[in-house]
Image (tube, rainbow, N blue to C red; front, side, top):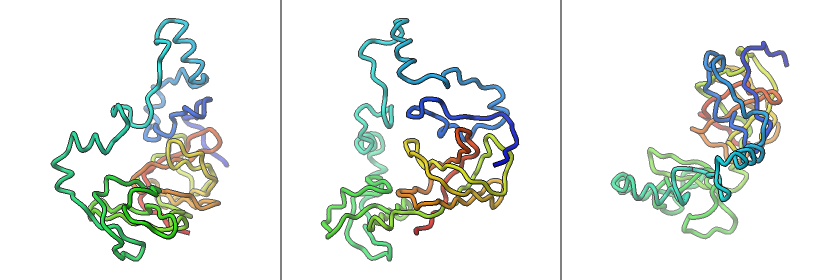
Length: 230
């Protein structure tokens, strides 16, 4: 892969705490003025150093998931903070891929792509959330095979560490904790690309970010707008 060297954003050495997935919107002028002094350290090494310098308590624990929600229960948080809005949303239809109504659900905000519980209905085999239409308050469920995605489109693409390329092979991360998947990235326009995976991926969620790497270099990122099911 031939990448023109610009200011580059690389993964941190601590792959379990790497934040590069979150930073794909940074522009070249941002990177030119930014330093990441902890990139060569693991989280454990930094905590140990901070403890030696009495900067953190011995019982220090890190935040997880949505850090501003103490118990991690976002549904309870929404019920407390935007109760009127939830009442206006109300219940909605639970449907299959053909749009057939299977039942009712208490509101689309109770579900995430890939979820397999909370439907209030029993099935002969496991069902998963495959799509969420927030505007219509409709949740689509299906078999695991319907959850897998062979390709996707990214919009609002930012080329972080490269000039725009016609096509390249890289590793794609679909979520912060996603291990990454090999695939081919093809530019449709400068800010819109198609990604074709070597192996179909589960729980691809429109509206979330996806990023592409060449080894440790973050090449681009964007917002998932469409997906195709294999």
